[in-house]
Amino acid sequence: MSQPNIGEELRKAQVEPLLPIEKKLIGWSLGIGLALLVVLAIVNHLFPASV
Amino acid sequence: MSTATWSGATPRRADNVELAPRISEDWLSLIIGLFIFVLALAGIANLDLLGWVVTTSVWSDASKALGTVSKSYASLGGFGALVATYAALLVVLSAAAVALKSDIKKFALAFTAVFWIAYASWIVGNFANFAAVTPAELQKFGISWSLKLTNEGAYIFALVAGLLIANVFPRFAEAIKDAVRPELYIKIAIVILGGFFAVTAAGKLSLASTLLLRGVAAIIEAYLIYWAVVYFVARKWFGFNREWAAPLASGISICGVSAAIATGGAIRARPMIPVLVSSLVVVFAVVEVLVLPFLAQTFLAHEPLVAGAWMGLAIKTDGAAVAGGAITESLILAKNAAEGIKYQPGWILGTAATIKVFIDIFIGIWAFVLGYIWTNHINRTSDKASLREIWQRFPKFVIGFLVTFAVGLYLALATPAGIAAKVPAAMGEANTLRVVFFILTFFSIGVLSNFKKLWQEGIGRLAAVYVVSLFGFVIWVGLLISWLFFSGVKPPLAS
Image 1 (spheres, rainbow over the protein chains, first blue to last red):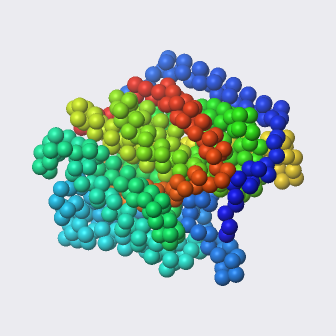
Image 2: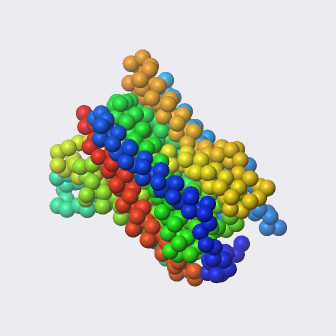
Image 3: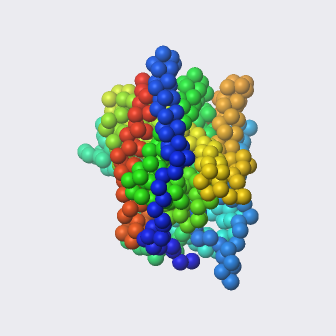
């Protein structure tokens, strides 16, 4: 089976601007991630692991 | 979970038509792992069915390097145990090859080469001048210096042997590719590891449950933050289109090969895109395995579980991450032992493996989320993403890990003392085979890592996204998250 050529494939790929739905996906994912990070850090501080 | 790029050649008929395997590698790893687990459990009924498995000690006299895991098979001798282990694995894995519709003769020959070269590298890595750690060991072997890589540092020797073959003897690498199956080997090892980890966890259940909860929190974080940033970098800074950027983001940020392939399927990308991304993931995973455990030993020796979680979060692909956890554990335990702190083994590796297993579970869910967005909002198609795909992409070997963990925990905690006392020895025998599968994994990862691919036309742009994201972001955010959730949590001290 012949290997696909990456250079060729990338050249053929058309430029696609970021759609609003992609911006939403990135924004929500990052926003929830960072918010959760703060919440979990606080929970972690208040309830440290039992060692 | 597909393993397209990690497996050997796709079996084909004489007229070049692809043959569909009877069963996936994922299910096979579950079956073989459970089979070994059940054999080990016979030890509870005083039936020693795995005592013949070979084990290797740190050595300066080669005749003392090998032995059997159980004294009841000591008459076999070290080399006899090695041959018995080879023969048993050859039979079991050849049956697996038949199920995968591979050519059994080609597989048997290839496996013979893989096993003996990999195990020989492991034995070399256990040479006292490489592996001895403490002053007492140096004295015991009558040597004045050692690289102090520990006996598990010998995995690196198996990896380097594989790398040499891939990059110096590519024709030989091609000839043995039928048995170069790191995903199969590591998944079997992870299923076995479940039982071993259960015995470790039983001794300190509250710590184990804390690790599980923190592991889940850590990987949700990793998914949400990693993926979004890497996708943005690939799309905005490097100009990749969606079909390339989504599998690339999953491959770099989540779990390498399996995540790239699951995402490619979910967004209905052409199959060759995740395969090309995966070939890059493999190469970078090797670089991480060779570097990160030593960084962890240098900077995180006093935060062992942060180091374990970091390996699980930062190193891509199941094999490389769990393998990285194993090396990290041996290096950190050795450094602490030299300072007089003797931690119980199993916790660092267990943390890395648990994080990786949870990541694997979430791949299906994340792929469904992406598939839903893509098929409903980006490339509207009649082939909509359905909830069934979550199960289809669920890594089945994880079921094996959970079963061996649950059964091991039950036997260790909820049975009469006479039975519970025999569980650690039984799991210890299975764990010896787990080490053999780790050795095969390391060697196979090396054989699949042809660095010449980095010079292939067009790969520079893909590699640039990888380098920027991995070394500029993923590794350090993984470290931050690991620190946040695991700092101050120490493994129990060995009694």
